[in-house]
Length: 485
Image (cartoon, rainbow, N blue to C red):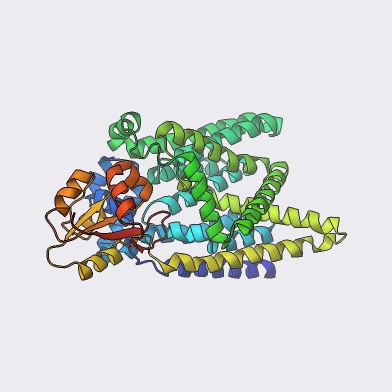
């Protein structure tokens, strides 16, 4: 029989689930961006047999491809149907974070963390992205919960559950392997330095079972395509190595964090970053003292991911660390309560620490909710808007070309017969034979790498192109009409 408090909490969590669903459905049918189109063309549209047996690159995320394939078969092909599995994993993560949070923090803090996740700009964005990242975040929460429950209770069922969930997570996205290795490192350190001596052998054996089962499930699922997976990571170098660098990833991560909190202006941005760092460190330190295994299991996967991504492909993206968003919010909320408790105690008003912290987290929830407007204002990338603009404004005798657009949706999705140019000589040849030449491009950093001559021409002759904005960082679609030479 649930107590009155439990029933009230249950109603609040259900309300958060409802809000999470609404925030992830609004704008769900907006235009696809290049990575979604790439996954659609190369994975989702394939027969099930091909999805199970062909690994053509790290954009192939088999579990998500199977789910999106089924959604497309039932509802037809549309942006919303391709993104539906991401929405469901995103919504399911909200109550799961609360369940996990109750194990490592007071109920009120767990509830606030779940509320933050509900309206998180980044979690909503990835829950509307037809790829496996919201599923990866879900499986990270689920495996961490199973690991903590297994260690706490010693029951074999939780270690078996961990292995199965880890395998499904890796089948969603191979970077889940970094998470599992991080958990293994965390459990090993905890067993050596913090576990009760009488439990070390038993928990060590069951942890080994959990991680071994996860590896076995992963190998079994990838067995039909294992040789091509090995070939890809061992012998095929990323085309964005030297472009998607750790420094660029840090800048993008900072930009995204400030966007999520609505922080504009250099002074305010610096203040937000400093305050956030203090809060996060105080929260982690407190968690490390009180919930050491949890703290280690939050930090170790991040460090393993940094090392693993650098070794595997030599590239880095902020999204590589999206898996940690749920546990990180628990750490941040704890940090707010610790910091506010210290401030209140210093002022001789210790009793008001929790109230001050609640106000602070509520303010963050409000700012995060407001930031969702930026997510809904534009599609991820507005290829359709750029295409309509060019079709409406080009005249007889005009030529349209594209440059530097990965998996070019204008060709592969919208079926426009517009050629791609990558050299100035190719562009000059077209310009000499046409009235005007319309050029469409995106991602300046990729254009500079893949078509540097075109980038220089556009910088010189199109200083103010028409921009069709999107929410992908650096992913505005740019359009310019070049006069004949």
